[in-house]
Amino acid sequence: MNRRDFNKTLGSAAALATFGIFTGSQQKGGFIMTVNGEIPSVQMGTTLSHEHVLVDFVGADKVSPDRYNIDEAYQKVLPYLEEVKKLGCKTFVECTPNYLGRNVTLLRRLAEASNLQILTNTGYYGARKGVFLPKHVTHETPKQLARRWITEFELGVDDTGIRPGFIKIGVDGGRLPTYNRKIAEAAAHTHLATGLTIAAHTGDAQAAFEELDIIQKAGAAPNAFIWVHAQNQGAENHVRAAKMGAWVEIDGVSLQNYEDYATQVDTLKKAGYLHKVLVSCDAGWYHVGEPQGGNYRSHATTLQELPTALQQLGFSEKDIDQLLVRNPAEAFSIRIRKV
Image (cartoon, rainbow, N blue to C red; front, side):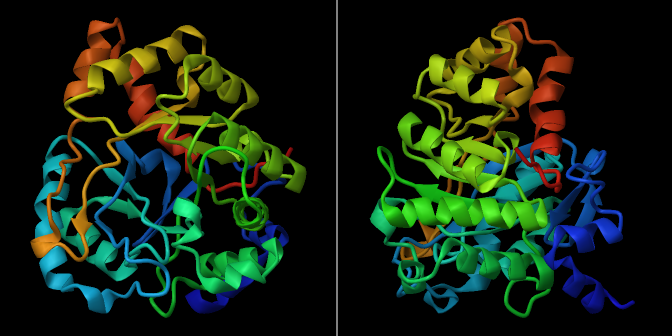
């Protein structure tokens, strides 16, 4: 069987099981899908779980790679990826979704030049009142939307053959409007068909728990869900989500806040949930529409200052390895997780 025929079989859990990718609803060890193909999860190594290399905030109806020079973007981004590679980073999770500037061919080019394992995503970003959602979201059902995302996993994005390694969605805070509930349900259906983890940009705790309710009603387990931007939502909510099994992501780590974020991670550790925490800078990026891509923020703080602050709080090397290596490998491992 050639590679294209193999990819076409990936539309159902049954087909995946046939090829040994799933055993029932779980898979020991699992695998990770990078822009250069799949790797065993044990090879993921030190990981930045939420970063960006390029974003275009022009809106879904205008976004296009024609709006920037891809060579200029490549030259702007590459030194920052080389920087984290030198600091020991092995895997870089790129979280820019479709209709917000996702460019998988740029990511593959950067992966090959930097020798980083880069993950891209499928899914839609419904935050900021849906301005980055394509028009078909209004009339398609969650299962129809999911079919689009499943197809990207089966056959690759557009005609590139590059397959997503996770699902990225976004919602605003507070009670979710219909279109945000729809994409959350679509993400659950996509997970159940592919095993891809759901990483959800989430405005606040109320929205996070509503998302968790939606995906569980659709049949997906909380450990298939990453609560992105959980910082500033309080330790009580962090512990509640982790106790349910969800991943709590403390991102946006910067030179201004890394000590505070270390304290938030320490609180989760003391509650017994260090194994459910992800950390990252949510940094970058080439800003489409700004001269030379505007100001690019380094991705290095999570690898430099944050570990030092954690060590000062009593974290061992094993604890930091849990946070930066074992947790991402578990969170992004492709396997179906059912309620």
